[in-house]
Image 1 (cartoon, rainbow, N blue to C red):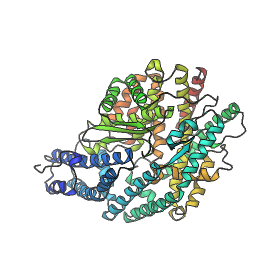
Image 2 (cartoon, rainbow, N blue to C red):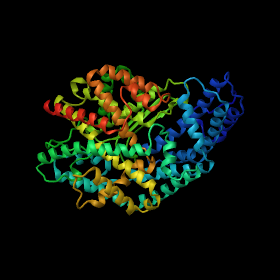
Image 3 (cartoon, rainbow, N blue to C red):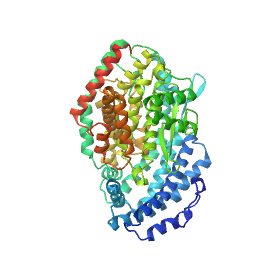
Image 4 (cartoon, rainbow, N blue to C red):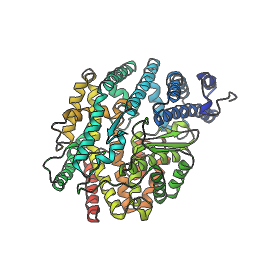
Length: 571
C-alpha cells in the first residue's frame, strides 16, 4: 500500500493521518491471494493506534498531574478511538463477509465475530466518556496521601506500617488509610452513578437486557457463564473459606487474641503470626530492579534476557511517589515489541511479588510478539493472569540470596509460606469483588444508591470472611467496593484472577516435580498468544481449566501441605 502512515506513535497527531489508510483497506479487493498482505496492513495501522494510546495511558499514570499527558490521552479518547472502532468495524465486516479463513485464525475469527456483533456507533461516545471517568478515578486516587508522623505519604507507603508486628501501629495505619478513603466518598459516589448509567445504556444499545450479558460477550468469555461464576464462589465458600478459618484460628492462638480485626492482615497485607517484623527485602527501587533480574535469570536465561532488555531500555517504573497512579500493571507496546512495567514499591515483600507478577505479563508479551497479526495479541485475560501468577510461584525457589534473590534461607521460606497463604486468602476476597459486581448489574437501580452498595458489599464480606471481627468499623469495611479500581475502571475484570490462580497453582505443582519442565510448558503456552482457546492454553501450560469444588479441594490440600512443609523448614 502506497499511503504513508506516521513513522512513530509520537508523530500521530490527527485522525486524518490514518483515515485514508483505513479507507484504502476497506476498498481493496480481498481474496485468498491478497489476504495475508491485507491483514499485515491492518496490523500496521492497528498497532500504531494501540501503541499511541498505550503510551498516553502510561504517561498519565506515571504523573497524574501532567496536563500535557492528559491532553494526549483525551486526544485518543475523543478523536482517535471512536473513529478507529468505526473504521475497524468495516474491516471486520469485510473479512467476515469474504468467507476467508486464514490459517490459524479459528480463534481470532471467533473473537472478531463477537466484536462485530456488539458494535454500535451509538456506544462510541459513551465509551469515550467511560475512559474519561476512569482517568478521573485515577486523579482522585493519585491525590490521596496521609500525614504519618509529620510526613505526607502516598497510601502505598503505609504498607510497611500495615504489616508492623505492633498491633497498635497496624490499627493506627489502617484507620488512617480508611479515613482518607472516606474523605473522597462523595467524589467516588458521583463517578459511580455516571459509570453505571453509561454501562446500562451501552448494553441496551447493543440489544442486551442486562449489562452482565453484554460485558461477558465483550470480554469474550466463551468458555464459562455467569452461572459458572456462582459455582466458583460456592467452591471457594466450601473449600477455601474453611482453610482460611484454620489459618485464622492459628493466628488468633499465636496473637493471644479472641478475635481478628481487619488490621491483622488480609489478602493484600501479610502480618506475621509469630510477631516478627515484616520482611524488608530491598532498600530502594534500584535494588528491587536488580534483584528481580537475578531471579528471572535463575528461572530461565531467556526470560532473564527479556527482563534485561526492559532494564536497558528504561521500561520499568517501580518506586512509589506522589502524583503517581495507584496499583501496578504491565502494558504492551506492539510496534516497539516491548512491555512496560509500572508498580508502586514501598520496600515490602509484596512489592517483590508484584514485580514478579508483572514480569510474567511482560514475558507473555515477549513470547507472543512473534505471532503474525495483532489479532493474535488478543489473548484471554484468564490465561494472561496465569502468565503472571505462575511466574510468582516459578520464581519463589530463588528468593534466597544464595539463589540470586533478596532474603536469607529462613526468610525466603517465610516469604514462600506467606505467599501461598496470601493466595488462599485472595480467593474469598475475589469472590466478594466478583459477586458484588454481579449484584450491581443484576440490580442497577438499587446499585445507584451508594448505601445499597455498602450493604451488598458488607453482606458478601461477612459471607466470605466469617471470622474477621468488623464490629465498630462497619462503615470502613463497607466502603471496600470504592477502593477496588477494577469495579470502577474494568467491570467484571476480577474473576480472571481467581480462575488464573487455579491454573498457576497447577503449574506450581508441576514445578515441584520438574521445575525446568514446568517452565518449558509455561513458555510454550505463552507463545500461543491468542491463537488457542482458554482450555487449550491451560492444558498446554500443564493444567486444567476449571472452577469446580473437586479441583479446588485438590489444590487447597497441596497448598496447605506446602505451608506445613515450609513451617517445618523454619519459615
